[in-house]
Image 1 (cartoon, rainbow over the protein chains, first blue to last red):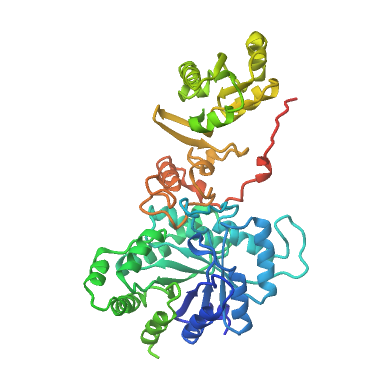
Image 2: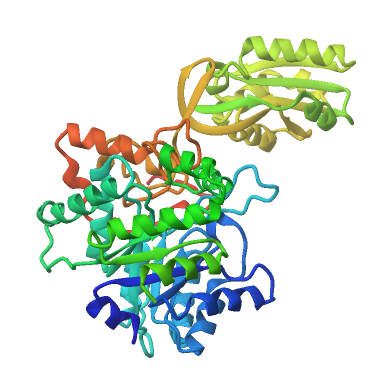
Amino acid sequence: MKFKEILRNKKFIVTAEVMPPKGTHLIDFWKNISLIKDYVDAINITDNQRAVMRSAPLAGAALLAQEGLNPIWQVTGRDRNSLALESDVLAASILKIENILVVTGDYPDKNSSHFPKPVYELDSVGLIQLIKKLQSGFDLSGSALKGSPSFTVGASANPGAEPSELHLIKLWKKVAAGAEFFQTQPVYDPEHFQKFIDSFWSYKSTFKKFAGLKKPLGTPRILAGIFPLISLKTAHFLNQKLAGIQIPGKILTRLEKSRDPRQTGIEIALELIAKIKTTCDGIHLMAMGQGETIQEILRVALGN
Amino acid sequence: MIITESRPKKEILKNLAAFQKIFIFGCGTCATKCQTGGEDQVKATAAWLKKNSKNITGFFVIESPCDSRLTNRARRQLKKEISRTEAALVLSCGAGVQVISDILEVPVIPGLDSLFLGKIENLRRFSEKCRLCGECLLSETGGFCVMALCPKGLQNGACAGSQNEKCEVDSERDCVWALIYKKLKKQKQLGQIFGPKPPKNLAKNIPGRNLKKI
């Protein structure tokens, strides 16, 4: 089933992300894909995550599309200007990619030995507008296209971001621009996540009023980010290197005391999934190349 | 104010290696305020260069070296000294260096690095305020410039990378969008950030800009 229909009809949606190859060998990429493909509805292919260079996700997403899987092509505005982004979006459509996740993009590391020039001409809202413009049959300069693309567009959300109202405004701006689903940053605190979901939905009417929208606002599906902590080192890495993530102290202590941190990490992820299952519309698994871990979690969580 | 800092002494000596007779220009405006190119710094630089066996043909602080009228006037006044000079060292921002370079025949060496257009908080703290983008948005962002204060220049609100209202790029620094939000909320103007903002018109920011008034 196409991801567009899954988003519309399926009660509990499962997606996972896979990094494109660093280099030209596809062995690890296909290994990770084959481990997870039977358990997920769609697979995100990430775009130079943390501004660390890998092959373009357009290639990985196109390979999945050829296999009849549902790729979600991730696109950031960090590395390309609007001209490059427009032509890449058209290329994605030609390559039979039907789903896009737009993200602003992590800033390049100032202390890295090579600092690439960040672009950020378009932010996530601008990226959605660009895709919608192409879908309407025109490019940003207003020239007509010979054949226009059609995409299901999603965006990211950070449930822990403060001030919360500022971030809620931006999330609803993404919905107003055309985002149909959200994949969130990793969730570690189910109570806090519940509060975030409640405030997100209750803010809809405020947003509508202040934004002066004439057309109705959509109802995006929300997939909670799950990042299994397979070791204390992973947890510290996420805390330090991934923007917008804070892992609660009690989880760190649990990992520290564990004799089998990987197993503990899987248990923590499963407990989280059980707790948030009724709060949102699905889960989005991230594990940076840990296909086995994702498979193990989904086998238990989905009961097969 | 154009915020400047002194270039490494080693670099300056390297740039001046081929020249013996040096004239030093200072700037009476921004570089004086920054204490990088005022009277005191020009004199100290002259003394330092003498110690490094250079001949100082003279020194002069131009009120605003970026104003070609004032710089031309200074050149006329200093004709004799300049005629004996092999190279000029300029303690001003890049604009001043170039205006002086335009009107002198000898090589002109920059003594300062130009950092940004910003605020002097005190003599140890300076902060960027404006990117000279050519299209002011301050009326819509609570008086905080997203081009100058957000590393990503985001127009539609904070990114998900901010943590505890601090910037993803520098955790010591406030997320400018958190500042905008609080200010607009206080002013009961939050409605200003609900509409999607189109990307900035970058055509107004092509290097080599000129302004001709009719």
